[in-house]
Length: 510
Image 1: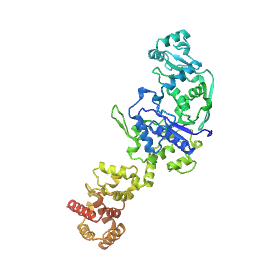
Image 2 (image 1 turned 180 degrees about the horizontal axis):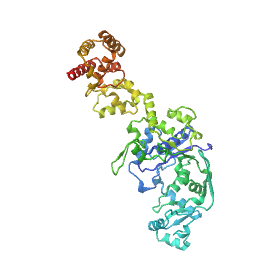
Image 3 (image 1 turned 60 degrees about the vertical axis):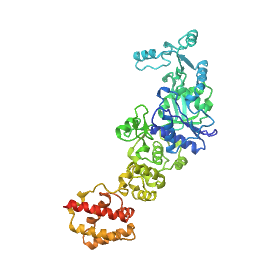
Image 4 (image 1 turned 120 degrees about the horizontal axis):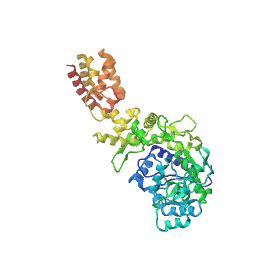
């Protein structure tokens, strides 16, 4: 690997909608590589296809990267020495290179109309514009120079296509896959400059990578078939020595391993594939993201890192700093990586357990507010979080696991106590309520000792009196250690709930 020149990598998404987790992984691997080698991570917005441009998508992409903690050093928002960072703002720079390729004999003008190309597709189901048919189509190779000039002077619409050579072997040294070779005859004559003057991906990516001094390119393996076009463009434009080193990342596959993971798979199987909620500006439809489902960014980044990479050990939980230290292209797999949502949930559960409580309190406060609780004390909230943290898979689970800390039960699991309820139990709880009204100190251990000694003195079984106590406080058979709950609720609230619960039990028994 050549690190004599400064490492500069780029993430270059198109602003066409939600950011797929595969795109975030590409950004992450670029970021890790740059940070590990003291280089720069660049965000470049590839908006050359104006027909697919979606308002708001660019800001959404930047928000996703910020949430993940992988913000770029240079971007449309941050600026830098190699701007502009939107391809649409770089439009004037592309035509000269396309025209240069035509002048040097490496590309040609194609005047075929959309209708003419559609007719070809109907005649030839597997039609592709290539060396096999370009002399039978309407372009500056099949026409005389005078005819081509006449069409150009008349303002006839045209595109510029690369002239792919015949029967040449084109090779690249991929950082993940080693030497990869292509037969040039199998690649069609890709459009480089569209009729509207905007470049296609093929021309723009080469020109931009050259002008931005990009040293290494991490992109999905779906771009491998386009590699011979890009290699030739670097060569034809005289930039071969400046060509970046490439790493084509393995696909993220459906859970069954059968094909690339898509949004449709997420919809079908009930999990997100976008980093954050994406709202379609036309339809208003919201596609759920990992953030809104309740994933921590640390967990999301961690699970993406191990989709196609490992450090060679059994370690699975990595901080971003650990990933920067351990990342290497040698440990990236060539094979696709299956997406396992159950494993993703495990990552989130583990990261919630090890998370800094103060960091997630704002999100829990927002969750409480959505459920009508707007006056939660941060100290109390942190104490409650400590009790239920191990039970959370997603952050929104906090309400299900801990709502009773903030409001009294709406009802009681009477079926669990009613069959065995007795006057002796009523008497026990009446006596316990009276004693707890003056009990001190109000700590979990002291409460537990006092309560259990009272059960022993009553002659009744421990289980018969522990469960009703829990149901009085929380409404059902769930929650953390019951005496921790009582200690958190405090004397006044615990006694009040016992009185209300006891009344409900005795009424149900009659």
